[in-house]
Image: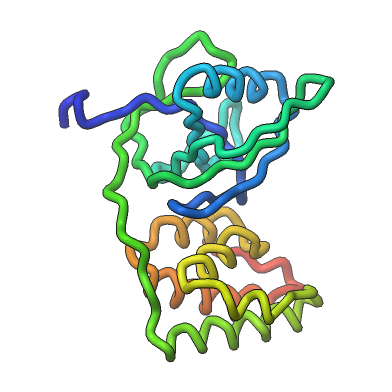
Length: 205
């Protein structure tokens, strides 16, 4: 692999926070190092890469796959914090972490090929919606099901992956699923598992 195949990314390691291509992720930025990262990104290419920590540590180790996003919206607050919205551009695979002087971490990474928007079969779509209803009922979540029914397949599945209270390992498995059908099937399995174990603090290893 040549350096021409790689790109330098500023990373925001945040457990449980997933970004997918063509999806949006709102973030409230308050730590000084990440405020510096946002300022730096705005001055350059507006890119920030989301990746999950793989465990404890200082700094914590990272999963290999994340998603780079572009700052699509930004509001600078009077005290120096930011409210931003990232628009997902592409998943990436980390090659190595870079030795940098910036307060925020940076990595060398390979951008993974962007897939075209995918669709589910009618049966797959129905199965996702059915399990989502059971999961919401079990957890006591209020959902606008009419709005859900208007979502395209990709927004439905990836949206569940982003907001559902799965553990980081489960979230990572969803991010790394290669196709929308694979992610839909795994989403159904996870909603079933975490729905049944809601009172037992189930985790996926």
